Image (tube, rainbow, N blue to C red; front, side, top):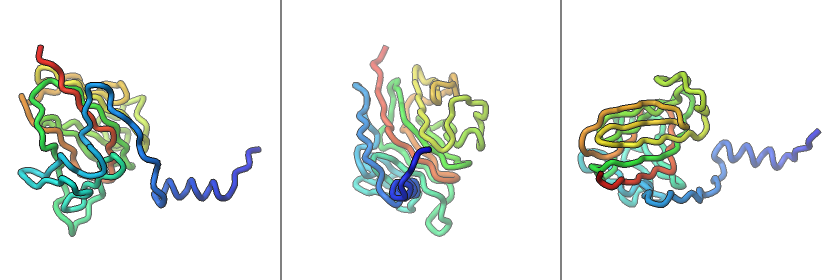
Length: 197
């Protein structure tokens, strides 16, 4: 029988509840990829048309927070602003590109990733859908999204399973995140623009 000390139980509980800071993420983007979360703030992101958050750790209505290399979509607070919010990169992406990120959804959370405008649903898939048949999705744990955009068509996967085989996109536009229902954490958001063919 394994003996566990009371202090290790309390430490684990404190970490799980967010009472103690988690260890810093030491992840580095792969060669050719650029991080879209350049530190501990929301620099490079905005609400449309022009409310930027450079140097700020939180959006004006509190729906988005930058923390330890993550962008956290916070639960809706009615007194602070609209229910649905969309946070966009200040940059647009007219070239073919690869987008990689990880997300962790609270139970029944509903968010999304915007690709030049069109939305890829990013949710607690097995509960909130629409991709309820995924075999590799890990509820309330980190999952990996990869989007490969070629000739204005996106091929999107979650942990290697296809979400959308051919999502049509406009010729250019920013990347965005949606705040709808529940908490969603995004981390390791990075992009590689591909050379013209």
